[in-house]
Length: 252
Image (cartoon, rainbow, N blue to C red; front, side):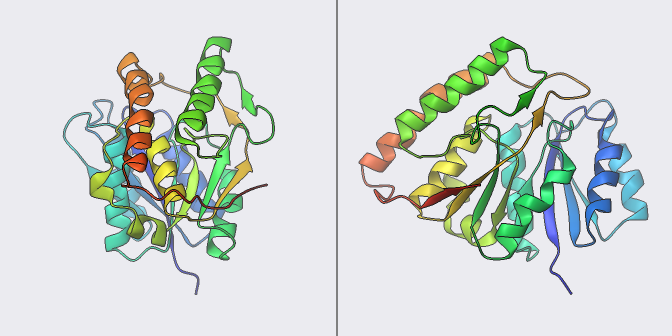
């Protein structure tokens, strides 16, 4: 019997898509389980999750938190749940269908087969693979990734990618309590720490689509956090808190 794989999805006001997302993910393969981390969505997202959980108690899990606490803290809560419950492979995925559930297997398989420790669904490893984004948003994202690569020295094309599969040994090695980023900088920091710990990282090209429902969670404070956090990470490495040797990154 295959070991279950956990897909972590943070939510805040995702009632328009969460039912379909959970149905589509669970239909992909029998070893997938879902953990929804909901930050007190006022639109009833958690109620929809609980409704489906009654029918799939072994495959749908829910963490309900009070108030909007942020993307990074939601994933950290999910990672701790995954480690405490023995999952070997853990995925990150958005709830708005900007990440296609059908791409999950190509991220999961190389991790489960031992070919890599971290598989990233990349928008930029084969040119630009984004559909329906406004030009301003695309320029911001692309330049942010160039900036993060330049400052940190980590050779990952999509440093801010939030669609990935991680082996538990990565999360066991990284000090989760030391991760300070909470917005999109969280993804940069996670990739940075995995690279500094010399884990194998593979970028796999996916098509990223503009969210189908709802509004983007991007804000000026999130952008500011990302700008300054990359320098803090770099200085920590230079001061000896990280390793100067990097992992061997492979792309597909």
